[in-house]
Amino acid sequence: MDIRTASSAFRYSLII
Image (cartoon, rainbow, N blue to C red; front, side):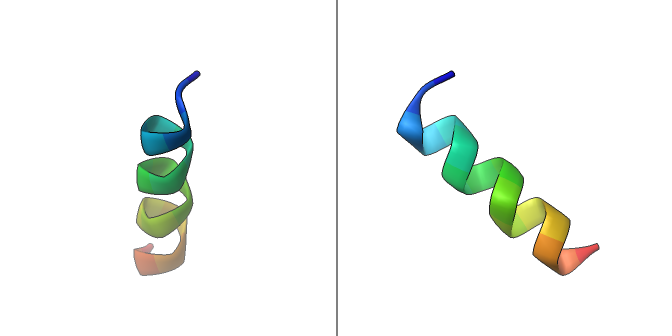
C-alpha cells in the first residue's frame, strides 16, 4: 500500500 493510497482510504473513511 502506498502512502497516497493510505491517505485516500483514511480520507474516505472520514467522509463516510
